[in-house]
Length: 125
Ligand code: AMP
Image (tube, rainbow, N blue to C red):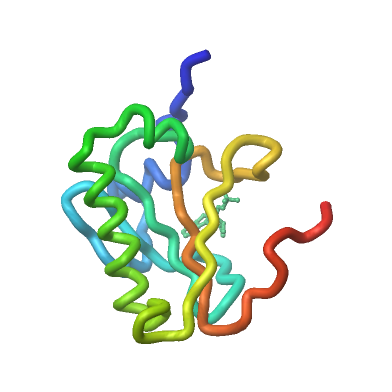
């Protein structure tokens, strides 16, 4: 089954400049911005600029340049926000996919959560 990308999803609109975002970092292939409804003192979303629904779509279809850029963007966001496990206190990185993953926005994004103890990895429900 092919991945179906919805060009009207909210992150596609942010990438097209139709909706503003609170930008943290922009690179050639990636964009990072603060989550509109933060669940922790640091809550940044990192997205690729390409039309990928979720991580397995991205990992199987994106170019090596996009994958490298995205990985480095995540690292840079951790440094900018002071949550790197090297110099800071660490973070949790989450990427939800599909209905069982409870993904709300169907454009690949990684949540970078930090600035406090994030708690158990999986909540019931
Ligand atoms: P997920 O459930 O993994 O798809 O998460 C979607 C995330 O996008 C949620 O944490 C929302 O708070 C966040 N979100 C939705 N709309 C916006 C927006 N316009 N700007 C920033 N974050 C948003």
